[in-house]
Length: 252
Image 1 (spheres, rainbow, N blue to C red):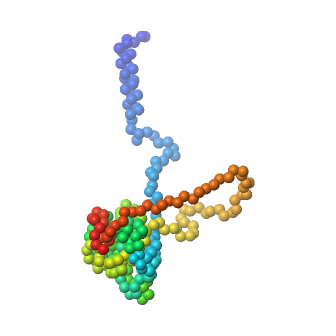
Image 2: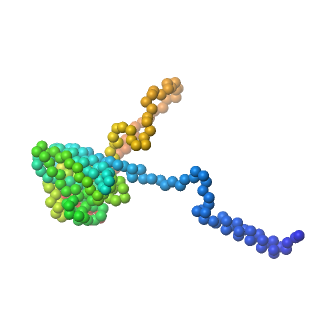
Image 3: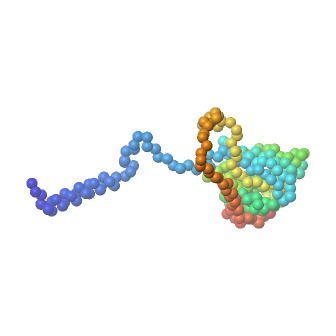
């Protein structure tokens, strides 16, 4: 039976509309193939569990040592082992904004690390700069070996991450005064970086093969490799040791 032209046209339009509705169905309604998995790119820094700052002299001092930051339950554990200080003395100890130790007096490290915009304070006084750790107390030989735990920062997480920042040890005691504790010159400084994992098999790590590889025949084709030297980036120097980000640097 031959359909009239008008009826044929209406049937084609209805068929097209029906097909369009099926194509426009939400992707969520589509069946998932077996073994199909949705993945999200992870931030590799989130897996960092330990950071370290190697402390070197500043302003003509003899201060040297290490500060290790370790992720623990409830916060960050800070292990300080430093020498070359005055015997039986106290020294302001802070994280500063930049990981730049180009200046011999430590000025290039900027002011205190203060992403939340708080006033300076000692650790027992509530809200403070994220980098306010109070003071280090030395023994009879001018050494410090101590551990403290804080809960107002993270190694590389979303809350006040410290990776890439700077550590400063000052010549004098931090008295808690504004704007930055009146702690004097910067006599020890270091950059906070990722610490190398301790030797040994880590959790989930496969055992490495130690047998000798099969002998390979020499090739007639030679290749040459060249070591490339990458110049380190230089952060903007700061003229003072005070409140920075969001407030401008002030203080020593």
